[in-house]
Length: 78
Length: 351
Image 1 (tube, rainbow over the protein chains, first blue to last red):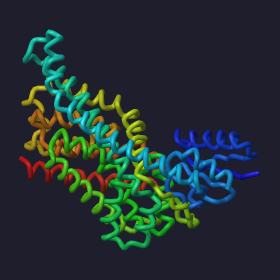
Image 2 (tube, rainbow over the protein chains, first blue to last red; image 1 turned 45 degrees about the horizontal axis):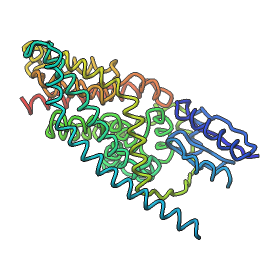
Image 3 (cartoon, each protein chain N blue to C red; image 1 turned 135 degrees about the horizontal axis):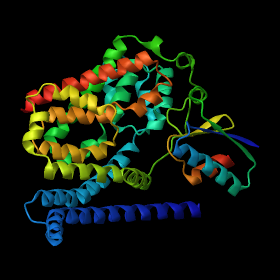
Image 4 (tube, rainbow over the protein chains, first blue to last red; image 1 turned 90 degrees about the vertical axis):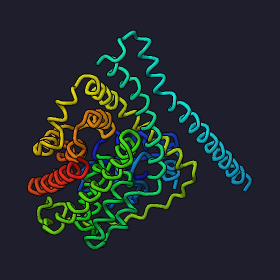
């Protein structure tokens, strides 16, 4: 099971990103745990500068703006 | 191998389609743009409003400015959206980390204009910069320049009010960001950050380098148009309505008396008035255009605009999460004085 964190203070884009991650995972039939990180200190530890960010199994794969769907699927499959 | 070659071919094809489409769109844009004034006049004539009346002049301003500003905005936002794909906050941070103050402030202010980031990213950006070793003053130069020298405002000023005003706005905005950041750095206020900010040690992130094609960049530009124009169009309509009212009804003597260069107190009043007001940069430009047309002093008007855009309560509330109240007060004071100085200087230069 993949452990996915969506980093973002709760703006609209961050919410959209979380939904995109969930949709992409269910499209691929993957079993994932998606967690939303809204704490700034927690976010800063991952070293991202712009939100929303996506962390998969402890690795930052995306930061800033909405991800592209095909990228998202590639990261989830990796 | 075969599929790879095929997708490459598709990409080239869509790139050609993009270039052709853009060229056609630009030609259409200019053709339409030159028809705006005659169309607005024709429209006003159809309404039967007495020509030369206050109402006619207001309505014409509205009919002419609405499509004009929206068209200009689309063009500016698209161009900036494409330019911004060449920058990212991560690259900017890497460029600024460990930079000395002075040169660092200058670089940060310039990067603040072109680096894409949304206001909800202000806190992670601030923490990310400081924890990566970007000096506090340099970080502030970035954070001040980003909203103050708004690229959309710059583009609209250029098109609506003229290149002189646009360039002076750019130069003074950069100067305020550089000097204010430098002053904050000199004051050594690191201990006024919220404690957790000082303790955070950011991990190094290595994002994969995404190779962007021109199609990606154009698509990013188009996304920016959809997002920004979709979000600010009602601000603009409101701004143009206010501008149309000023244009048609507010007597020039009254305005040049209140906002003219002779009344010294008009600049501080404009800055104070601007702090609680929060408008999108794009919405304020039509108001600026109308005010200047009525003889308001340029410095006063620009000070008002910068204050509205750069000093806003919502942003203060967001920044409160990382800055102590004292540091926020210093921030407001330093940026406010910078804007005041710009206002007075402008009035002295252009009157």
